[in-house]
Amino acid sequence: MLDHPLLENIADIFKYDKKHPLLFSSGEFLILFTVFLAIYAVIYKQKLARVIYVLAFSLFFYYKSSGNYVWNLVILTVVDYYAALVLHKEERKSRKTLWLVLLIIFNLSFLLYFKYTNFILENLAYLAQRDFQKLDIFLPIGVSFYTFQTISYLVDVHKGDIKPCKNLLDFGFYLSFFPQLVAGPIVRAKDFLPQIHQKIMFRQEQMGEGLFMILKGLVKKAIIADYMAQYADLIYSAPATYSGFENMMAMYAYTLQIYCDFSGYSDMAIGLALLMGFRLPENFRSPYNSLSITEFWRRWHISLSTWLRDYIYIPMGGNRKGEEKQWLFLMLTMLIGGFWHGASWKFVFWGAMHGAGLFIHKIFSKSVKEMGLNRQVLKPLDWFLTFHFVALLWIFFRAESFNVAAQSITKMLFHTDWAYLVPFMQTRGLLVAMMVFGYFIHFISEKDKARTAEYFSSLPVLVKAAIFILVIQLILQFQTENVQPFIYFQF
Image 1: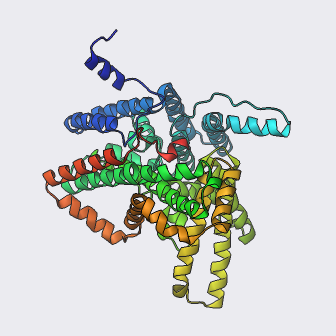
Image 2 (image 1 turned 30 degrees about the horizontal axis):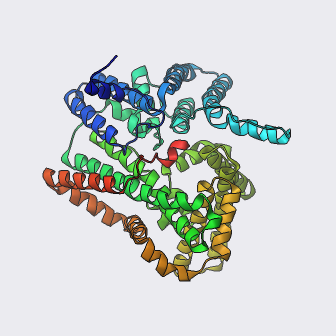
């Protein structure tokens, strides 16, 4: 029994709270990471000590995020480490392929059970015309991400693109690295494993870049995304009871929310890794600047889109087996991508519509090229159509059901009155200002973003500290009672 309040508070730090999982944007994490980094700064030069320390903290972080399901991650780590060694030594091609197939099934079995069991049972019950009661299955945070990550590792070992880890600690470090563990970016072993063995050098520019990325991520997530969520949640709880204009604003709010939420997490992950001497891949590149749906998927969740391309689309045949099969492979890839996001038909529909959008764009681009039209003239229209195609489909991402999504879209299309504009700006001035600010920081050029990062890195330490304190104060000012979980944690 711990009777002293201070001891009880310290003990709570090491306990898992299902209602309050550990989040990057929480004060608890920032305090823990500060303590972690102070110790890391002392031991980072010793490779073995560094690996053991970061691995232990990563497992602790995952325990604080998903409780005892940390053992799921441990089991996958141990099994896939030794399985990759066997896979690498196997010389017979048929047995090597069989091994790979069995290992992929094994890894996917965890994902299928936790994420899709209720979905499968619900659909079987519907076909059998029976009542269905959901099973109480907890979805471990990040299971979709680290499952895809370890599958890519096994496939690369099978193809001979990389050699398997010779050390279980190194593989555990790679798979459980806490900055990107629960929501990406999805990291390739060939890009990350060499960094484990390199000599870590802390340069002022890198530290400044890391802190800037963390601050940028905090602003995106804890200020903009969480504030947009308050309005989006209100409207999508009952879209039929609100005007078409309000539903349209909810669409724009959620479009900004999901970008700031997910890219904000990626920014923080990249920044945290930089402060530790590691570099994670870029995951977003101003996706709403895209002039086509094809370009959008080159800018949005880059680590997932390239994973789907390299491990599903290309192995199926890609564009090597004729145009008709290419369309089929493209659609199947996007269907899988949609289903990966959630165990619901609305996510499958979302993926299918993006697949159709990619298909239509390829046909349209081919026709425009054959007709010799000036694409420069079409750029504003290309952007407008692409942005609103993406934004409209985000409604299916956010809405609880097809019916709710249909209600919102119907309201927007047939019951929008622009006379609501001025009253809306007057009554929801802060929301409008926040939305304008959010889209502004998205649409500024990549060069200006780079200049801002460089300028921040050149500032004195005290000025950086003052900016950090200001951001924390803004977060406290705008946050709701509970810290909002990251959207992609549910995927």
